[in-house]
Amino acid sequence: MTIFGSTLTMNHPVNAETMRSLSTVPVEDLSSALFPEWRIRFVESSSSVEGLQMAPTFNHRSVQLAEVLDLFSPVPAGVIVDCTLGGAGHAVALLEARPDLSVVGLDRDPVALAAATKRLQPFGSRAVVISTRFDALADVVEAGLAGRGPWPKNSEGEPLLVVGILFDLGVSSPQLDDPERGFSYRADAPLDMRMDQREGQTASELVNSIDLDALTDLLRENGEDRLARRIAKAIVAARPIATTGELAEIVAGAVPAAVRRRGHPAKRTFQALRIAVNAELDQLSLGLDAALEVLVPGGRCVVLSYHSGEDRLVKRAFQVAMTGGCTCPAQLPCVCGATPVVAKLHGGSLGATDEEIAVNPRAESVRLRAVVKLEEGQSA
Image 1: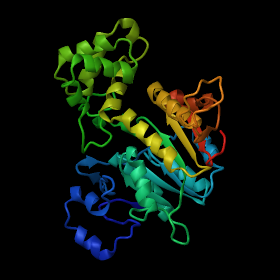
Image 2: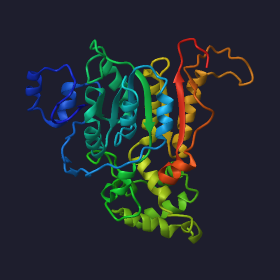
Image 3: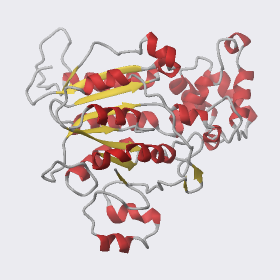
Image 4: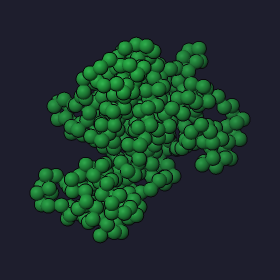
C-alpha cells in the first residue's frame, strides 16, 4: 500500500537521494518540497500522530455497502477515489470485489488514516492513501495523472484513469464514540469537533467568539433548528463554554420540556457546529464539481449524505450537471446550447433498508444519490 507518511514509503518518482535530502526538511515544509500543487499533511502510521493517540481499532460499519458495490460494478477498470476514506470499509469491499480496480483514499483524520493504512496494506500498490481534504480532489488527480504524485498504474506503468468517485459524508461512529474528539453530546470532554485536531478553529473557539445573529444563522442553516434563536441566546449568555457537557446542558436548558422528550435537544446544535468547524458544505460543493470533472465517460459518482443540507447540495449539483446548466423553461426544448454532463442512475435518493437500519442505526438518515458521466454529445 502507498501512503503519504513519515516513512516516505510512497509510490512516487522521487529517487532515494532526494528522499534522504528531504529527511532534514521540517514536516510543515515537506508538502511544498514534494507536491507544490496542493497542501498535504504527512502522518505517522504508528501509534500516535503529533500527540494524538490512535484508537486501537476503527470499527465502523459501512453504510449501504451492497448498494455502493452494485453501483460501481459496471465501471471499467481504473481508479475509484474514496473522498472520505475513514476506516476503509467501502474501499476494502471494492478492492475485493473488483481485482481490476484500484482505490485512492482521501481523509484528513489521522486516526482514520492510521486505521485505513493498516487495513489496506494487503492490497499493495492498488491502494493509495492521501492525507488531505476532499476539496483538494482536482489537484490530487491532476498531479497523480501527470506523474507528480503517487497514483495507481497499469502494467505498462501508465496512471489509471478515474472511473468512480465515492463520498460518504458526515461523522463516523469511531469519531462519535471517542469523547476526546468533542463530537458527542453524551460525554463531557473538550469542545473540539475538528476532523484534524492539528489545525483550524475548535468548536469552543467558534461558540465563544461568534456573534448572536451569526450563531443563530449557523444553527438554523446547518442544524435546521426552529429554536435556533432561543438556543443561540442561551449559548451567548453562558459564555465562555469549554466542554461538550457544558454546551449540551446549556442547549437542554434552553428548550421546552416537550422538545427534550423527543430526543437529546443538543443533537442539532452539535451537528451544526461540526459542519461549520470543518467547513463541510463548502468543501462538498468544491468536491462535487471536481468529481464530475475528473471522471471518465462511463464513470460514476456516488454520494451518501446524512443531513438534508448536504443532500440538497448534492441534488442541486447533480441537477445542474444533468441539464448542463440549461436555463430554458422546463416545458420547452433547450435552445441555450447546454450539454448534459451526467445522467442519474435512479430516481430521487435511496434510503437504507429496514434490515440495514436494524443492524446499523446510523444508516437511518442516509440518502444515496448517484450519476454516470456521459460521453461528449451523449443525451442524458
